[in-house]
Image (cartoon, rainbow, N blue to C red):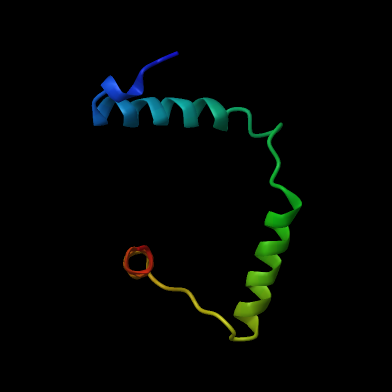
Amino acid sequence: MLNIENLTRTEKLRMMEEIWDDLSHDSETLSSPEWHAQALKDTERALAENRTHFVSWDAAKKMLRNSTP
């Protein structure tokens, strides 16, 4: 087993990119779970009914940082 603790940050990011690239070539055999499709439908409905809204990525990161202990 590879000991990732000894890798540099750059090496870890390259490894993640290689893994993602490899996995993405197999997209035909990967399917989203049913709950994901339902979550997208629920979000679309909430948007159409003005029960939710989009926020910028920067605002989302700030909210997430502020919500964690």
